[in-house]
Length: 524
Figure 1 (cartoon, one colour):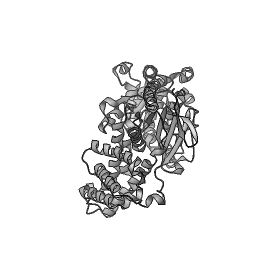
Figure 2 (cartoon, rainbow, N blue to C red):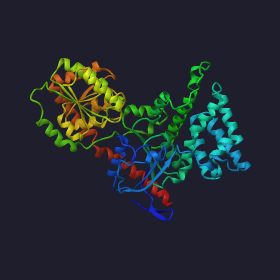
Figure 3 (cartoon, one colour):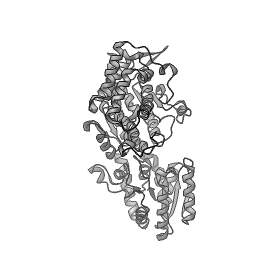
Figure 4 (tube, rainbow, N blue to C red):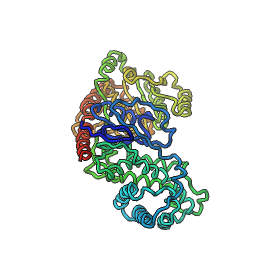
């Protein structure tokens, strides 16, 4: 690692190899993405990192769930949904030339045709703000005549069916966090390479920094941020909609929500245009990235992985404790008791399985306090379906201990990315029954031809289909031979294609290559 000293206030520090741009995740939020970031830092202890956390407000960073490792040398934060300061809401006095440049740049950004033109305009706008536009405040965007003229033309081009007041306030709310993001650019730590874990605000920040500093930047996406925001916004009740909509067309009624959707789509497009490489967890997400504007030659699939040897002891103990009766099958579920995991479908399937094979037992492991109302409804279903002797809620536990007591893993989620619990089950020689969501098809059946040759490691089912889940589980429960054969395929697959050490070696290669280039740029 090369070191080049930079000034940060009164302190002189080395330029870190990597700056991670994190939106609403590590270290203040638990979950798969945060755990992955934590593991990424641990496995690259030979590199130095800076962290730049983007949160909604101060409260979003009130409790830290992960200990920051020693190779993180800089940690900065910015909050996008804090109210702009009183000073920033007051327009600054701008000269005629600055006002003219502001008008031209806003027109290029909002009135030009084509995503590529607008992406360039947005990146150029950030550079202009760093230079000549430093005096511009949020209040100028709200009150300057040149800004109103551009806003009015945007409104007249496509939003005239809704009131201008509704349109204006929607634009104001949307642009407040974007403005906070632009004003936070100077806080982004200097680094040799920038790496965002999503598109959205963090991805846009990466695009701006890469354009401003001419430094390497790449993207990893676990879920597809643009798609997730589209779904969230469509269902959102926090976005204002006109109360009297009887006279509006269908598209006009959704106009204000569409402004939000278009904004996040644009941020995604700007990220994809700037990042190289663009990493996805599996083929389905890679396809969506390309649909949302990612260049085919930049997209690369690097799945998540685990350490198979971590489960060697659990695998041996599970074999020793296997029931003598092959039909006394133990079905295990490991996950949060929340609607997205569709535990109710699993319970309905359990009733169908019990009617055919009463000796089968279900153990449901995972936290129950995230959605207490939903968990209470699941408990009521246990009673109403007469599953008291068949299904047990076991609470949380160490996955290495849980899997010792499992013969078949079941997953009934309506949405997933790449569930690590399936890989963990495979490492114990346990096959899976899973809904066909996220990367589950690739995990069970293989992704590449070489991977597919390993064989099937489970059975896929449709979403929210208790009968399909029950049928698959009954097939598994009736044949220990099938379970063992699929379990062996799963163990081989995880060892060959999902070993964390092999996967992280690719990240190490990306980091070393890009950071070497970045350090050379700083040295120049």
